[in-house]
Image (cartoon, rainbow over all chains, first blue to last red; front, side, top):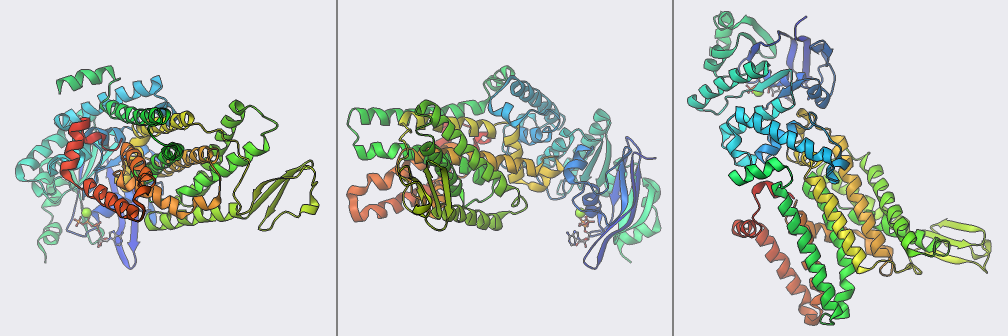
Length: 252
Length: 358
Ligand SMILES: Nc1ncnc2c1ncn2[C@@H]1O[C@H](COP(=O)(O)OP(=O)(O)OP(=O)(O)O)[C@@H](O)[C@H]1O
Ligand SMILES: [Mg+2]
């Protein structure tokens, strides 16, 4: 059994079968790519995996645990964390606090302990600060830790979102178009960061991306979606040379 | 930067700490000076009479800010929780006045009971409306506030040698009671009399401090961050493993508890009448919160002091009173949206963007 085992999940919106019969097997430590034209259903797959939508059939199993039908909160607590295509930061919180929200379930103390400023609170907060600053350093954001997160430039906001996701201590990290809106230099840098994260945290990563340079550069395996169905699946080099995939991307 | 780092290691001098300290000092300073002015008879009895209600309204504004500014949900029924606290506390004090003659024991019990009952209402109202947001939540809370007031307005409670007598919507038949020992407690829409005047200014100020302490510490903690995360982006908060239900309930409960306490304090300082807790009061408190700069505890407090005292202190202007009041409202609104004013505030209080919400 694979680390992530998704079998035959699907969902419809009204008459539209947005995702149909979707299967995915990812091994531990793999860097996996999900690609496809606009509107193919890639983000919908992420929403199904993370519990935003409930699949109308099929199962999702991560590391031996059945996550089908669980809520986004439970799924996060079972080890799946994600970023969003259109960045969703806590914009009125500082950069540091965004990451500390990610640590919420990792270093807990009760609301009462917080209000009364008991020793547990001090210890946990100090631990959170250290952990969060460590994560920010990985993404070279430590200098901006006291900034309001909405004041960060676009590229750094994307990085902060990844840092926040990692703070929840996931087994599997889902990145929805991490390079969207970045210039080639930033994309290059992001590729390095993703590789670094993978090594350093021993992370399994599934990412959606349109930037073919990034995909072919770092993904080991790919799944191509088209109109909600799988068009091709396998080793990156093979998939990208698949004639069906080429037509889907270039049009008939 | 360097300085910041050394501070952080100790873990004690977090930057938000200074911001909170300023708020405590402002509150203590303002009421301290006010009390001195009253003592020295510089300020008249009119001013003196404003101070305790002002404390209650500060507690209301600070607790409402938790719902509106920190959780980001519009509540239009905050007066309802104050009403619950006021009536529960008042009835308790009247009933136990002979049994527990010492105010030192009776009043803390009344406060606890009033606060907890209001908090219970917060939970009971909170659970069914957990899934409501925005306009819908506003409408339901508005209805809740009005329903509570109407219920209280129709409640008749009397006591005699045989015990307590309740009646709803119509007065208690006097013939059913032992007239020799009969005493009315609640008489429908009539003002409640016979409540011991247990609230002193010192006590009210202490409760303002308690409210500030609990609310500001809650905001500046793990739970507070989670609550603000829900406000800023619910979907991202869920994906980060934050329980929406739990944190909404924490907010509703804490917010209602302090509104209830404010109600008990208020009821034990003046005459009590259900019309005081109508929807206008909820809106008035909301105005304090909004003009204090939504999300700012200190702002809510300052706005309450200015906007509550002003109409009273401007009585000498007679007909022009409301005109001046309206101008002050507009000026505060403009200042709230003025970047330069915010800069000035920042340099004055030396706070960073990150502390905006405390
Ligand atoms: N909540 C929803 N309600 C109705 N239709 C939806 C919903 N979510 C997605 N869809 C539809 O499902 C299809 C797939 O959308 P999805 O966002 O998954 O595409 P995508 O592959 O991520 O595209 P892009 O590359 O543009 O991000 C689209 O036709 C979209 O309009
Ligand atoms: Mg998408």
